[in-house]
Image 1: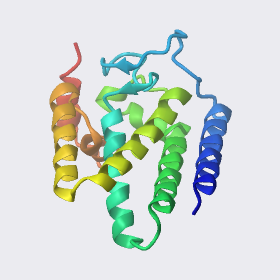
Image 2 (image 1 turned 30 degrees about the vertical axis):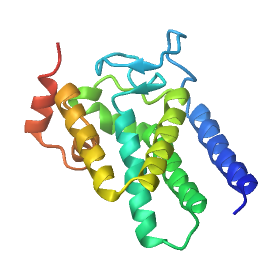
Image 3 (image 1 turned 180 degrees about the horizontal axis):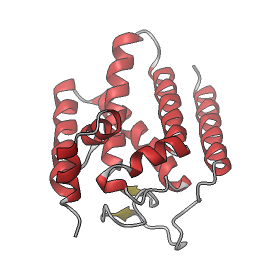
Length: 187
């Protein structure tokens, strides 16, 4: 795969991503019209609206996971082809995450009661974070990638009582005790 082919395919994926989110009615940026690099308050209406937030760490971990899975099940594919597959999966998730069904499912979680989906800026940033995680995983030994993923999960669990593990758990199999623990983080 040539660099030109890779860039064209990646740009096409992002164009489909952005167009679909726009058609779903997601805003380009936060409602106040200000673009911020980071949103730290998990209860802010700007969560999932800015360039990065606590959930950006989950998207880095997505990249770690996709790299490991694709290295295992498609080891002969060139790295750029595996990255495009990972991007396709991440873009598909980002589109699904901003569908009414998933938005409503998230709203049942303690930390996402007012969730309205991602801004297009945040969603594209999430894909970039996944690509960054994929690249990091391609350069580090597996044990360091696993240690980083665990550190990110522990950090977000301690800081905001959430992370990839809790997000998936609450979405797939809600547990009242976890919901209550997360709700206890509210001010």
